[in-house]
Image (cartoon, rainbow, N blue to C red; front, side, top):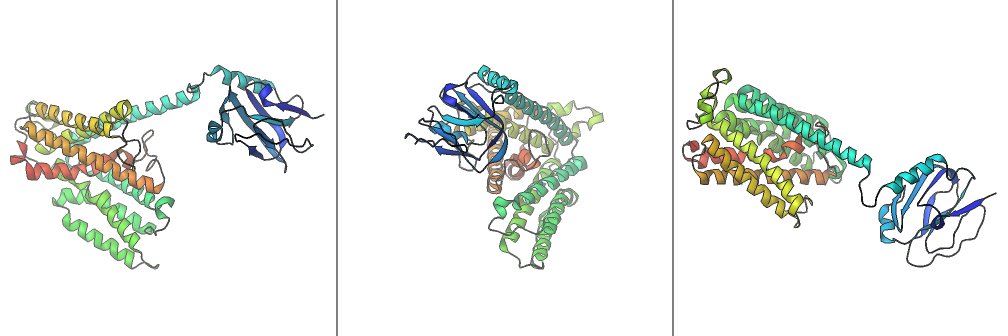
Length: 428
């Protein structure tokens, strides 16, 4: 004997378990009244303003969940939630079930669980998952901060090799983004062997910069080699291949080299730094504290402060979108980030006694913020075109290398140029 169960007259949650039903289809979710359906053995109906129809051909569905909270649909498996949000009236469905299977113990347990969760409150499982992600971000963020701080203090080949490793991973992520469906659709990405060669060249650039003291000739030579490799390939070369490869060399290889020039190239002693005067001999002594080290520490700290203050300011006061490239960024958050970046630069300049001018410290903080914001938006544009959220999954809770260093890519060039060209006597 077949039994009809209308949803509107039953509990707030119904599970269809082990049913032999036809594919689920919404015959009417609109403001008008639905027509009565003929009652047959293969079609179920209920006279109401909203009808969820289950009709042939048959298929096996292990579980379909339909949860109602008063007049608001909380969850419908397999059906977009937005459909029901537009029509918040009572939805009536009629289903034919095998007697004894409609309300088993498992179904009742799920009904009670749903009824015990207040409307608008985040489920416990989602809350635990978010807390777990936050813990991962904090733990790995602190770990990376300590590691990077030690590498920056050490300088020399340790700093350069660590930077080269990050550049290699970042270049691989970049060329994978270029090959993704979103960017590759409508263009021809570089061949894989060219992408790998470019990644290796990018990783060698910081090493060559430390060894030779400059990078201009090396970049020109590398660009020539890559261009020849693309032109001599078996397939017909495309301009999109050349442009994406050249930008990869510039973005992932050439720009990070300025951090080597800033940290290791500006070896002028920071004479007024009190912290350097008492620095232990075992850690390099006072000579360890150079203009390059102090400028790198202030720049790194300012970028971190800019990201942190921008996030907090955007969450608290964000109303006006900054750009369509990254919809979550707001003008309010950007202004908060600018203020935090400049404040950090000024405070650290007083601590390290470099640069000696407050105006120079403010200008240095402004450049750091501008470079970090521009780098962040550039990477967001690449990911947006690629149709991905993260550039990779290397760092748990953070994404890929590019996701973490995007704010630093352009900032190194601006910081080095400011100290080298605009500060009298390197700010000492």
